[in-house]
Length: 77
Image (cartoon, rainbow, N blue to C red; front, side):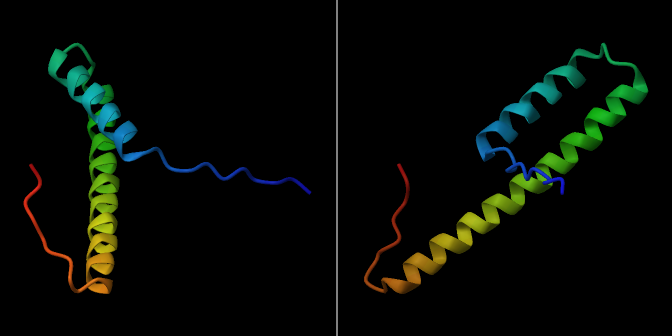
């Protein structure tokens, strides 16, 4: 029996770094059109993954704050 290895998705920070790299590539204007379109498509998927992770983090924060009704929301400085 062959075991399939499950790889964890990249961290949020790694996703941001990859997006930065794609933006740099696209801004350079050196990629052929088809390759630029592929990179753009990949970037859109990365943005969607990042948004999902942020939403999950926000939900976790809300759950934690709801468990402790005494917790105050304060601005992050």
